[in-house]
Image (cartoon, rainbow, N blue to C red; front, side, top):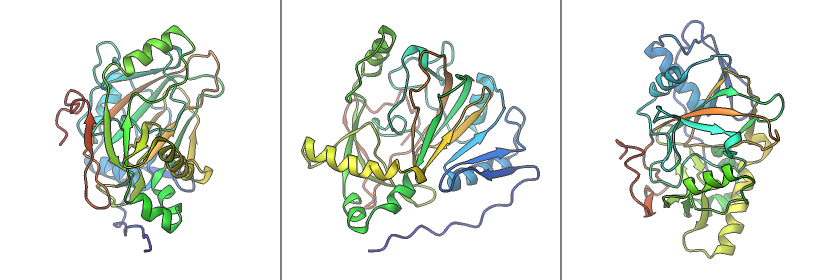
Length: 310
């Protein structure tokens, strides 16, 4: 069987002044000529959405939004989730998650946001408030390109696999009491959800590997076989040609499609401060190649997190 990329619809005309520049061979673009703090016309929102489908991750430099501006921009792409199913939000901002290196929130493992629930976010926005003078970048990977890279026999196997994702995965030993407290909060309510290993994107129809750090086991396989197969599949996601590296400046904002990417924040900035704010857009229930949809294995339906999700 030969896997083909779905035929893309003709790209919409780019509104005047909007300049979208590719920054990676397989993923990533910078968007210029758009002030996210101002009113954004519907046709511009549509053009940004189309660029997101094409490039998977979009960078908006020097926007310097406040919390209200980030919330307003993210809401253009759908209903917002609350900050996180278990971790507290920014004070007074129930939809904003603080990603604070000083608090032990260092996402230095490859993952897709919140895949341990049945309806992971559709998209995530990250806004840089404080960044270190070196290090502290974010890496984002194109999981559809990774799927296309698989040898045909491995693709055919992956199409049939299901993985159980959980927030109670193996963590590194916390290096501070703040990090230990964050871990306790993260696992304070346990979730386990079965997702297809190959997810069909609901808009583009692309097939992509839907795994990452929260995927801890494969349905029908023992622990050793699960680890080996997941490690093999994950190695295609993290190939350098499938990854773009975002070097942050204060005021930058990144929007990425959480349905078809993974990301990683290298812990390479020592004790320097790093603070981002994350806002996520509610997503749908992932579907596999055979049309089967994700199902909860343990935990509630996370309705408090995605109140209107199907």
